[in-house]
Image (cartoon, rainbow, N blue to C red; front, side):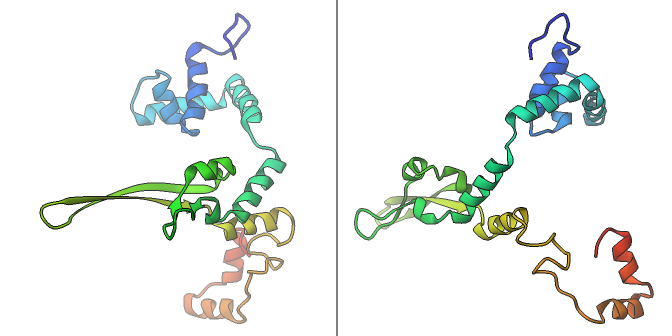
Amino acid sequence: MAITKKSPLTGKQLAFIDYYFICDFNGTEAARRAGYKGDDATLAAIAYENLRKPHIAAEIRRRTKTRGMDADEVIGRLSDQARGTMGHFLNFEGGRQVEIDLNQARELGALGLIKKIKMVETVSPSGDEEIVLTRRTEIELYPSQQALAHLARILGLMGAKGTEEDPLHVEIPGLNAALTRIYGRDHDNDANANGRT
């Protein structure tokens, strides 16, 4: 959004909004980078106030809509994670040695499956004062079972987590009565009062 005579946003407020997105929605850091002054508590208070100003909140909503994912994209990403395998990343050519091939993964559109990547270098002596440098790449993919569980809930294949419709929900007969005897209060009512079942 450009500053115009009709724009209710100041340059500093626009900078705050920009940094709010850049800093992963950390209002305190966004205020600091936008040029507001003060310690963390002061910057947090400024961010709190800014985020409640209608014209700033409206601009953040507008930008979120243009940057957000629709339901089909969320389901598509989770489906990709559920189907993801290390096979997208491994190159078996060249005999017995298996190599991680990130270019192959890029060509397959699989780089979004990576949760974490780490390059490791090891230096070790190898007789006659030689030094051997070993490099390896470690990758971790998003867990496919977790993606499947999210998809199952989104698609209505499972009930809400912790409810009786959830296949993972387990009732233990007499547990609440035993807890009441031990701790002296009704745990069914405690769970219901805290929004749990």
